[in-house]
Amino acid sequence: MSTLWVSAGLKNCSNNTHEEVRGALETLQSKTVTESGCIRFDVLQNKANPHLFTLWEEWVNEDALTAHFKHKHTLDYLAMELTEVVYIEKLSRINL
Image (cartoon, rainbow, N blue to C red; front, top):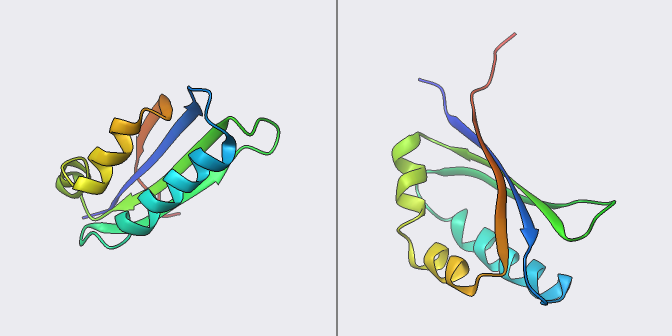
């Protein structure tokens, strides 16, 4: 069974500074990687537009991703309303 990859695009949707958003994303990242179903959770910032971020995630399966959205740290991040989702792609690796 292959793992689930997620690419999620976020944008700063408030008057918060880039540093505030980056700090909150750093906290989210540091706690998310401790989840048993998380293999990878990277936060990237767009070089041309610092208001845009990409989350690059790998999960053991869909259930692990679903569980992620029930964890306190994820709910806390979402409640801050610092970013809004631009896109979410669920992907699978092609072994060539």
